[in-house]
Length: 81
Image 1 (tube, rainbow, N blue to C red):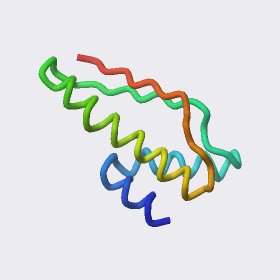
Image 2: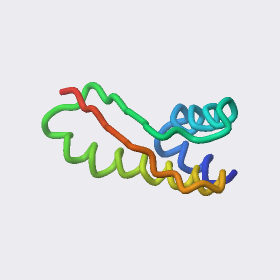
Image 3: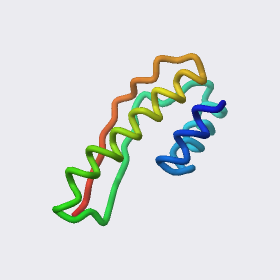
Image 4: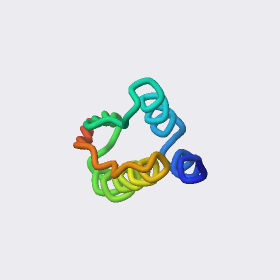
C-alpha cells in the first residue's frame, strides 16, 4: 500500500492509520469525516484550506484506490482561530 504510506507522511500518520483501522474493523471506509483544526490564525486560513484540506482529499482518494473503493466521503473541516 504505497499510496497510503505516501499520503500519511504528508497529512500525518493519524489520518491514514485511522482510515486503515476503520476499514479493518468495519469492512468499509467511512461515509463522513470531520476534521477539527485548532490554532489557526486569520492569516493562515487560506493556506490551511489550500494545502491541508487539499492534502486530506488527495489522501482519501489514494486510500480509496488502495482498497478499490471510490472514496468520496462527506467531508467537513472545522477551523478554530
